[in-house]
Image (cartoon, helix red, strand yellow):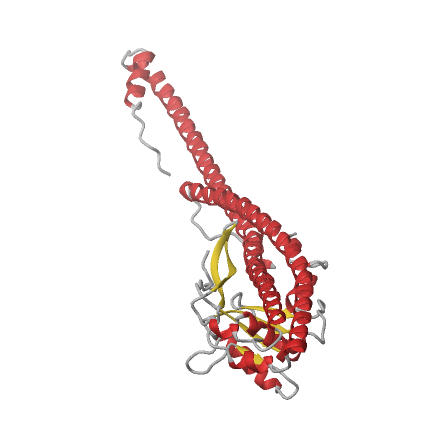
Length: 259
Length: 130
């Protein structure tokens, strides 16, 4: 991808260099933290996976037991209990409560079942009153146990799916930081440093050049002064020193020579 | 982190069922069944006469209802509406595939476990970072 290692378009100043460096430090730290988070989430993920597999197997067993209990109840209490049960459904007494758990920074939903005793308990007591009451009771307990296992399984499954999403997002961010943001920042820093160096070199070069000119100017004046000074003592009798001072002290305050 | 899909916290949610008659009877015995004032139930009994469309509609209705947290569905019924079940991505309500009397549990078809199997192949979510 050609756009992968571009740099940001910035003005190459010293301030921007500082800003870019700070951002790079932030990106590096964020990258390390996110990697740790992703690792922690993956560990949780694998644990939940193992639990799901074992729970699914036990669920198969539990369901089978409950089916047997139901068949027994049907055999003993007559086939009619199906209709009796269907008729007597009013309000659910076995419900599920959902809440959120915070695991390694991710909100996972958790289900737990609870019995709402206020909702029509009386209806289920009449089933199997004629015959087979005990079988019906045992069938009921078997199914309640099945519900417990199933609710736990549902809980595990939702956590599993949520964790899956979270891991994908975190990995996406880690990869983005590692492959896009950091190279871009590094390239920008290199570019700014290069520009600053070049400016410094330009400055240095300019300085040297000016020094060169000044030196030559001074040498030229010295030569002129010498020639002049050679002539002056012959005419007016000033020493070369004072002639020298005349010319040079006056020329001491040097203005910038503008070319 | 922005909660892209807010998970509902419900203090009293129902368990929906789409299964054959015997399984539903058993669960109703346990007290999972609910009929509200509008005669809407939280279960669907599937027999040989039930159409696939009816099953689809029930599934869609159960998953969009606010007060249902878990949907139990027999695996052979889930196979009938496999595409719906597989494309369902919300964490709540949770879709759980249960075995039925005639069809013992087959992990190869479970929508969640099939995703898991893909995880343990070469391209897995966890090791995809490298």
